[in-house]
Length: 246
Image (tube, rainbow, N blue to C red; front, side):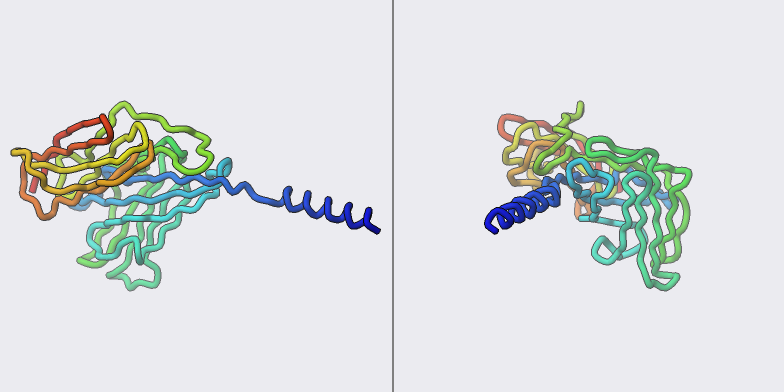
């Protein structure tokens, strides 16, 4: 009887081990860069995360953490996003009336991966946005840009880009995305200064892991002119110029 119990216990334990899923997960952040609509060159901004189990990238889960769409007050808190990481991103406002709807499809020119980006397919991508009038058309430009993968069991590693501090678009009005690469985990300070060197605002002041990061800079309350984006992390220091044009 004891032998039978021992065999059953051994079989149960092995079944539990075999059934246990791989709990190691990773997260990638993607930024919409230079996504320009053909209506008055309006620009769409956004950042979303893609969380997945290691070895199963395609079946992850996407979530917008920031979304700014021209001609509507709706953002990521009430818009519905459907991610097909290998083909498209669809953003809609469900149950809306005709003059307050959002229906945007960004087709990808190539599948996204943890460390590679994709241009927006300008032939197939389209938008219909209601609200302040009605706007429909195509896109003039756009990229879905990947940050370095982070998380437990990162299978891809971190790849340092050639340009460690970029500002896009530049010139800009009134938003732009500042992308930077952290060489080693450390406290990062990213600040904006005017031409006299005076501090305008601080975009980042916190500890961050190594890899590629992006942050949106909103210059809506600033005047036209030249500004300096200053990055400091440990012994690293970099500065680039940004032009705000009204």
